[in-house]
Image (cartoon, rainbow, N blue to C red; front, side, top):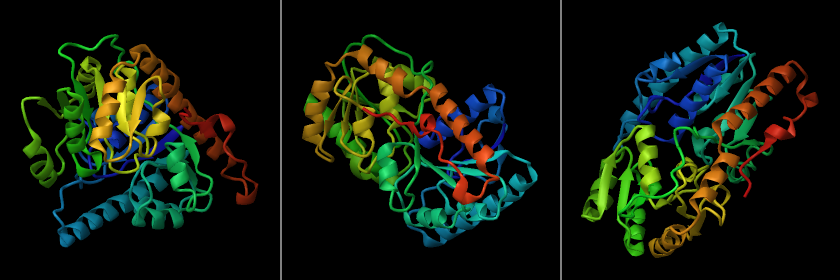
Length: 371
């Protein structure tokens, strides 16, 4: 197939990844290309050259510090970039478009396209994305990365299909035992909605040192919530490549996931399970589906003491059970199989009248990580 993949423009699609969406997009494009499909990735400058990306503009994910004029300028840059992209898609004779962007502009522009589109919802609804969804091409196929996210979108997108995210199980390799001295690990973007400050408090409540890794994308948050908590029981690992991150996760006794928003999927939890590292997490969004009692424990949101108790319980869980769950539910190869099934379906049915188009086959639709 000849597939266009639309990325968001905030950060490059390259390691070290700014977050889970960048990792997911990179892995999907890489896997599709390895399987022989002709994939064109539209992304920001600095994306991995091995993916042969089309650079639309410089990355726009700069801390805005509440500068409204700056926000308008960023919007204008992204709008011009996506409009130029649409011309390239029209000229590219693609079989389908896979839209991973978080911006409304590609959705609005899709209404005038003849090529079929698949849009994947990676976040809960927010105003501009909702308006883009409403303005999208008739017959747009919408997917959600978890059943909980599909439910969150259900009033706006009543029939979003579910294709769960996958990870590279070879990179996130199984480690049968943690390394001494025992410690916990946290990874992700160091921003308020990921809740590192609560993970620090919870690790201390559990009596475990904490190693943490990720990009510092919000200087104000770091100064207000993280810097005052720094101490000898914390190790800042920095912003790591995925191989280095996987090695660090495998060495830990337990992984902490502390979202302060309704986590759409929770790739960091899946990565930990693949390494054999049990997970303690706040009960938000998809966490209750990613984890079950064999491999994790859940705590009430924003309660650091409860999360500390969950850490103590999770630390004694079977590492083999964690890996088994990851192999069953989060294999990137299986994820790619499901996306290909969706692509084939939308290509085959695109020429049919809207009212007569069948639903995506159940093997793709139900590919969620049910507990």
